[in-house]
Amino acid sequence: MMQALMAGLIVAAAAAYTVWSLMPAAWRAALLQRLTGKPPAPRSGCGACGDCSGPPGRKGGAAQAQPIRIQRRIAPAAHNASR
Image (cartoon, rainbow, N blue to C red; front, side):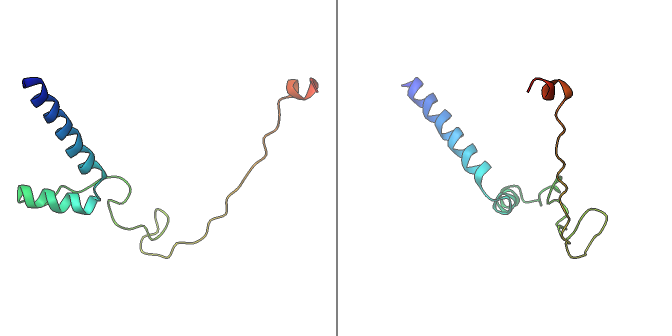
């Protein structure tokens, strides 16, 4: 009986963690604010400032296309000599 209860609690905790981690961040923040009564702490990392309009150092501007440079690798001399 006790083992079944413990297994059920572990499964319920795992399910709650899965739902929490896969929930959209806005929903998590709203639910956390509703449960605790205080606003969530500011986030850090990508998306924390809400300004994704351009490259770093250029706030509020429109994003511009940046070229991608691809460089060919030069094979080592020992590798070329064995051919």
